[in-house]
Length: 190
Figure 1 (cartoon, rainbow, N blue to C red):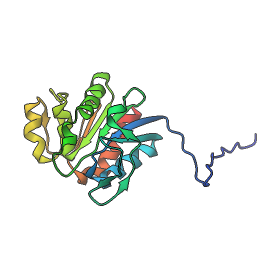
Figure 2 (figure 1 turned 30 degrees about the vertical axis):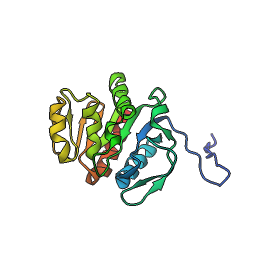
Figure 3 (figure 1 turned 90 degrees about the vertical axis):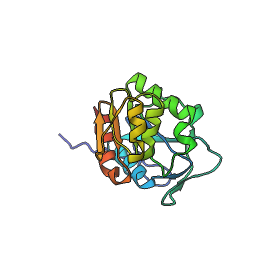
Figure 4 (figure 1 turned 180 degrees about the horizontal axis):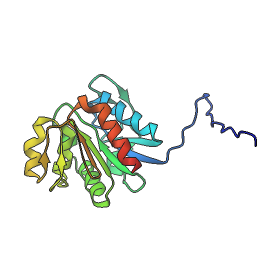
């Protein structure tokens, strides 16, 4: 019996085309987001053949991270639904901005929670989960500054690097990047 070789599909630039089994929505602040952890998260998901689609509250300019990573998002948060995605990840940022209370950002958190989809967040982005009202009796972590608001929202703040509570995966800050990426990849495969 002859060995069958799988041939990779190659695009016009000579790069291998990777097929994704599913897609996770990444919700990114317009500026000062934690770009290093975002890279870990996207890379970990790609390793398990899960694609990502990035959205933000603005698409008229590039979004820029704390370490100066810049990229154009795939769409605006107000026009996206989680229907075709297996989950959503809220990207951590440097300061409490309008992004963390944006009605469309909060809507995505609520939609993910009500449908049992994967939800990820780290750092100050854990505030999105508290403000969306989805933390009642849930365990999470995030920047120390979120602890009080998490408790007021009915959640239990744990100052650990990573906390996984069913389909909810949270990281304390940028130091949890690699572990957070691995935890999200493991959850999306379940």
